[in-house]
Length: 467
Picture (cartoon, one colour):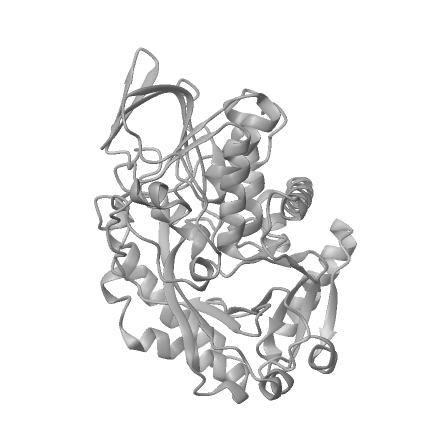
């Protein structure tokens, strides 16, 4: 990055560790990145188009420059010949896309296939399976392309049983994948897992899915950015949408640097969606904080003691799950639940809870120094599944969000699907995630966090105390 380019974007506002999307008026204006391993090791920041600096007319304005928004811009250009304009309140990919664990799995939300069947029936469940398989192939093609260098590590995904009582359910889900969906998952014993994958000391077995890729989260986002701009999209950081109105069918998006007039608007703000962004997204998500840490590089002896033989995604079977992996530079990354509110995010007890989870899995790492610690908001929908949707057919406004922590992979497809909606090419998108809106709590909205506190206590009791 040249000094001239850097000066055009500074000074940035400082990172706010207490930011909370449920109480903040908005995500901020040109705030710096969270102090993540990904940002620190991504190399020079790629060029963008600078903040909005005057009024402009565009075909499509995308609000949010994370994986979803950038994928939407890429596919609008690639598949429909539409050059979008992306508006970002802070720095490019400031939210979920540079704070996640870098794990791509064959998922689009938090529900299992058996839960798809229970909710929607067998035919729709099979359709959902086809959708996420197509999504994974799209993602695999993107990360393998020469434009996106994000250190992909193949090897499948291991869902690791943290206690014996969950093994029957894992076995059932694996059999269901094979028998009903024709997907070759398999159950791995504790002994095989320790010998061939990792010596997680809590593990009693695991379910292995062949599709799973670990990536460098920021390099993926910046690769998307470079590709989107190469295809003709413009990406404007430091440009929060402060107001929106519709005039003669055109949307006027007010930013600090000027008004962007767009014929269509795509909302891709995930867990950082401001309450005032749209009445169609207000109260449709429950943002959940997730902590993440990265250790110092492990010694050869520590690597042997932990038995790391893969860098592919690992998660455990807790409801408030741990997601963890072995990084290419011999560090360990692990994340899990955090505080309820942004105000409490820096409380040391949340970091300590996460570290206790690390030590239970890998006793050889007890007391290890940490090089990075951060947290971020996950966009959990109230029914645990995402939506890619046009909430009002009379208006050209669309959204894609609600991945529930499984957006690294599916956001690429969600962006592509939203591009199809915008271009009027969505006649075959008949699954519930495309044909229904994000649900909301209605009158119970003010009590969401009280319910969350109670659920966290119940989840902990069920995960740790029950057999």
